[in-house]
Each structure stands twice: as C-alpha cells, then as structure tokens.
Image (cartoon, rainbow, N blue to C red; front, side, top):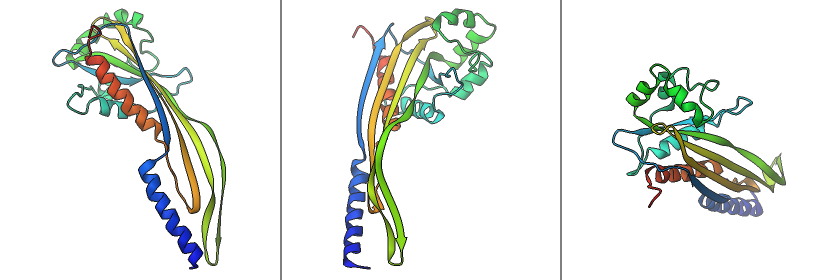
Amino acid sequence: MSHIRKTAIRRALVITVAGTMLGGCVTQRIENARVNSTGLAKGEGVVILAKSYHLGNDTEAKFVACVGNSVGKGSQGLRVIPNDEFVDALFPWFEPRTAPAETKNLPKLMSRPGVAETIKEKGVRYVIWLDGDTNKVAGGGSMSCAAGPGGGGCFGFAWWQKDSNYVASIWDLNGLENAGTVTADVSGTSFMPAIVLPIPLIARTQSKACNALAKQLKSFIVADDKA
C-alpha cells in the first residue's frame, strides 16, 4: 500500500470519528397551543395513537412507539396505556375508519354501550393523536467509487436535507374537549464526504423530534395553565 493511500485512510478514519461525535446539522422549533387546563389524577394516564391520512398512510409506527416510550420515561414520566391494548379493548370505535375525527363527536362515542366504562377501567384521561411525517426535501453532490488491483475507494461529497414535522393533539376524555396541541418542526442536513471511505454524518431529525415532542407533552399535560 502506498504512502499516499495510507495517509488518506488515516485521514478518513479521523473524519469518521469526528463525524460520529458531531453528526449532521439540526435545527428545531417546538411550540404548544393550550385551549384548556390539564392535569392528571392518581391512576390516570394517556394513550398515544396515530392519526390516519386521507390516503390511508398512518404516522410512522416507529415514531409513535418512540413518543410513547419517551413520555413514559424518567421521574416525570406519565402512565402510558399501550395503544394496541386500548384499540382492541374499544374495538371498533378507535379503528382508522371509525375513530372520532373531532372532539364534537366524543359525546356520541361515550354514550355507546361499554365505551365510557372501558375508558374508565383503563384509566385513560387523554388521547394524544400524532400526525405528521419525515421527508427528504433536498439533496445534491456527487460521489464515485472504483476498485483496482491496488485497492478501491470512493471520492466525492453528497448531502441531503430531511424535515420532521409532527403535531400532537391532546383530547381530554373527562371534559370531552380539546386541551390543545404540541408541534415539533425539526430540520436537518446530513453529509457524506468520501476520501477512500464514505463517511456519513447523519442528522437524526426524527429521533430529535420524538424526544422534543415527548418532553413538551409531559410538561403540557401536568402543567397548570394558570401557572
């Protein structure tokens, strides 16, 4: 192996370590809009569900699970009822085609036989509807890879931008009303320079949106709007 190639590989390894530590560039904006006061009594909890799109595509199951796990963690974690358990217990009223689209439909739903009793038994105070997705919105650059008798490698530079936009709508099943919304808008640019070895510097927008949204949801639900 030539001295030049050894130097290039060492340089690539240094950049790889730095990239692992730094990652891509990420910006985020978290906002909430409160409509009514919130709070949790002993034994009460939340269920987190995906809002269905008109084309039938649900918010990513991985993201819903991430928010649920994060909301339930830590000393300030909330009691989270598993969404599958909740939907199965109330079948078919929270299936995608029959779930209430607006809080004005809640009184009719709660009047159905067994619905109010099941919700009370499960200890569900709030339904949190998640809507949104993560999309690649831009990208560019070029990269070429080749192999030869003396070895191979990749050279070039590529980048791409992803936006993670999610909205959480909080429904209070006690008051049968909308408590408010929490939104997360996270944008990140990932890079992949290549000096013999491709070095991905990934902006993990979805995981950051999950953690930020979960943190804000915990604060929103336990906070007093008069504070």
